Image (cartoon, rainbow, N blue to C red; front, side, top):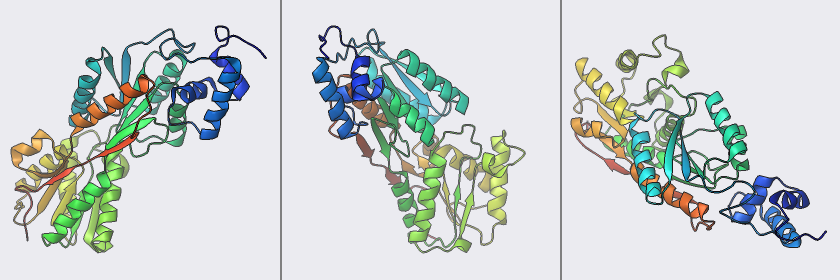
Length: 350
């Protein structure tokens, strides 16, 4: 079958190689989500048909949209989201790209977005920030011709590239600290109200906590976990302040009472700190409290915390996306950035 390069389309290559159009696009752009045998078959079909892939004017789209979509599992008022978005904006704006946030409040929102972007190709890259995705949605991302980059996603399945912190390793550091300070009973407190089905930090950090207490020799009688309201079904699921009071009551009533408390994020930790002190707990003399994030809220109360840098996560994600959009192969598709454990005035030796 003889065709000239000017008449051959990407659909012809896909048909001859026996794969989808998006797989042809990914294979010829050098992206990582293509099996080596499949890539070779696509390249062979393209060569036989005389097809040359154009990054800037393929049959998949009329040209670049100069727009990047950022998928968020919660609102832009959240500390992590706002700072990660700022880092993304810094990375993309200098190259002339508009950065558009899309908050996914429900599974229907996400499915609608993925169907739309698959049909229209109206963005040049997709950033997925702190999402917990099931296998079906990972597959939908993998089938997109658009480069997809994850920020703090627990899995890299379906992604061309990612950048994250190691939440589990960070939690191990927190538990080692509490053990070294003499705390024999510990607790983990999740974000009290979880409004999105996609937020992943709670499950990842909880698992890190559970692994760490096991490593440090705590038994189940010495460990308390207090999960998000959407998991334990409180009637006050939409009232975060009432939820914090409920959490404090559980801590006060626990036997043995935890003296070392890990909290999923700094915002929740600051609220809990205030409530525990209102109830008469002396922190850090009786109880040590550790947050997670490095939010400026924690600076106000001198909170011990795990510090991450979401702006840098955003910058690194933008750089990876720009390289992929230029058709370059990444030296390091998946990057892990360090965290630091800040010990301040909410932790002390018993």
